[in-house]
Amino acid sequence: MTKRTEQYDVVIVGGGPAGLTAAIYCGRARLKTLLIEKSLIGGLATYTDEIENFPGFPDGATGHELMDLFYKQAKNFNVKFKFTDVKSVEVVGDKKIVETFRTNYEAKVVIVASGGKPRLTGAKNENKFLYDKGISFCATCDAAANTDKTVMVVGSGDAAIEEGMFLTKFAKEVIVSVMHDPGIMDCNEIAKVEALNNPKMSFIWNTIVDSFEGDEHLSTVVLKNTKTNELIPVEVDTGFLFIGYIPNTDIFKGMLDMTGAGYLITNEKMETNIPGIFAAGDVRDSFLKQVATAVGDGAIAGYGAEKYIAESEIYENQILNEGEPSLVYLWNAVDPSSRELLPVIEAFEIKHGKTVRVTKVDSYKSKGIAERLNIKAFPTVVFINEGKVVQTLSDEISEEKLEELIKL
Image 1: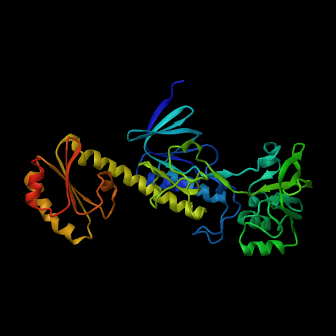
Image 2: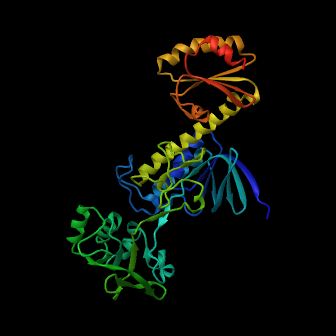
Image 3: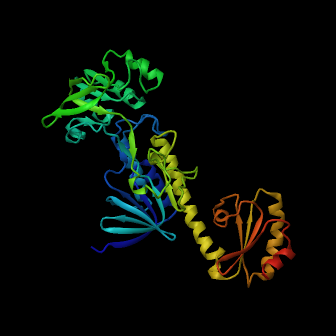
């Protein structure tokens, strides 16, 4: 099958809060923007029944309501949406090619906001009971449906214990499977004390899940004692798994730098190790993963995409100057020596502007052009001819030395 090819300025992979925020920024900058989401706009945030810590919503909001507002705002800025799975991302020269089943999307910038997915136990029969058949990953989504029922929570981290305590507001009993010795949990000390004192919570220590059992719906979780290998069947109505998340980065392995756990490594500008590819949100190695932090990531990535594209155009059209002679003055607006040299550069431009293109780049606003030219000190003059750097000048820049440069 011959695939279609479509061109965009920016392609965003993932439609959670980070991807949607990046889309809003790119769309507002009038960049031709496409967001690709394989399942649900809003990502995992959509499953959160109540978000009370996102600024601007004093009465809280459901995840679905909040993400729907993000989606509408992005559409208002003419962002296009495609609901499909991304097979691969390839870099060919300055172009990034995002491959889907039917279409290859060529872009100047790719923003990876593919989020993560809940980690599974790997126990027997697990796939038979996922989501609406008895295994859940969201207490706020399914708590009400478990009113006066018996549920099991697997895990003992902050999310597991806090979600478990929330479940006690609805469920008759919350049984927690903990793989550690009695009294040892992975959560913070405050949550641990509250959970141990909660009359609706009980704990089965030194256990992992061996299998999930039931007919069409989960009815029993069989635990295995890690010290004695004893199998412990526990009758439940629902099992909640809170044992972490796995970032959706498989297609980027060997391409983008990532941690041992698979989270993408970026700098503070959300830049990955490949120029023109940014990462934002839960897919990124970060201290906190919340809707608010995802929004911040997305804003930075969207702004960075705009800057990258603008600087690429300047670099290609002005700096390289189609192979004709080009003189670039890289300066810093807050540096007195840089400002003092401006009249010298402007006088040179008046004298030689018809034969040598002069471009002044303020590195205080962005170091993107300087980094492309491998310049770290300012002020610096770079002379380029036939698309190649001929010479750089950083010390004692003067009219005489500029004249010598263009004679090389």
